[in-house]
Image (cartoon, rainbow, N blue to C red; front, side, top):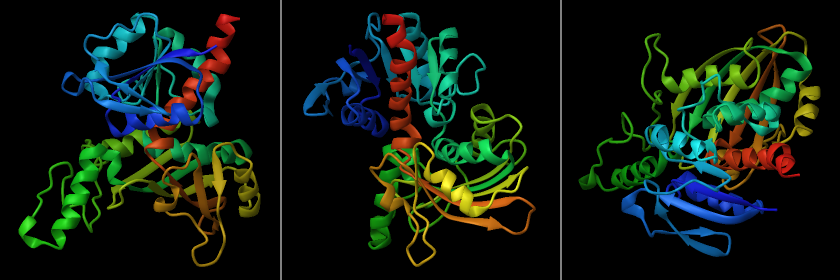
Amino acid sequence: MGYRVVVAGATGSVGREMLNILAERQFPVDEIAALASRKSIGTECSFGDTTVKTKDLDSFDFSGWDIALFAIGAAATKTYGPKAAKAGCIVIDNSSLYRYDPQVPLIVPEVNADAIHGFRQKNIIANPNCSTAQMVVALKPLHDRAKIKRVVVSTYQSASGAGKAGMDELWDQTKAIYNPTDEVAPVKFQKQIAFNLIPQIDVFMEDGSTKEEWKMVAETKKIVDPAIKVTATCVRVPVFVGHSEAVNIEFEEFLDEDEARDILRQAPGVMVVDKREDGGYVTPVECVGDYATFISRIRQDPTVENGLNLWVVSDNLRKGAALNAVQIAEVLGNKVLQKADA
């Protein structure tokens, strides 16, 4: 049995990836609807070997549809998410709108798939922030073995985390570096992104952290364990696709780096590439288009009693957004909807 599936925001970077991944993973789709804003009605989007034309999100009737993958941002989701949910369509939302709602499960399938049953309260499931998603995939199997006390993470987040406009700005500014007459002022980012780093993602909060950093703290606690202490520094870097993270972990129990390496090799969604030689690690360019979260540079931290360091890399448009949403849909099909139809 297949499902009637909606992808809202189908013309954006994440929406197109959702369509691609649904087809790649052969999700059981009986019917697909690609939705976009009125200005994009009729735009053609690829779905496997077929092409679908976008329909108007504003006038779409969600009645009779099973699952809707939303990639339309928090403001639009606030309008259309409850509308779809009320019509009986289960919403899997990629925005930040519902992530911190106690009545909405925040799911990374490799980490907390069983929490999915909480969707019944609002008929909505939240997808986590891209930087959080890849980190918790690495943290959970280690937490199960030695219990994590504290995490210190520094992120190196690509321009695609800011959508197509972010990638376009990086491209245009990079070209302008070699042609000074074509100066491109920052619009999407706070400062020049080409050949530069920007230690700000999202707005500043009262304590001096940015909202992106706050998201990593709050979401890790909700997904993995509320007792874990997390401090984050999030940095935008001149990379088109692929987020990287330097993660320092302090455990309650000692965990040897070799055992940690073995645990991670067996963990779902993880690929360990960790050779202590030149190039024996994964960079963001190498992870693009892949499903896995790659972990390298696993080593003991001698400055604390029970510490490890990791290098974590993932395609943020996939595991950080579209792939995770499709995986949630797969969990729904396997754990919930299939049983309801039986």
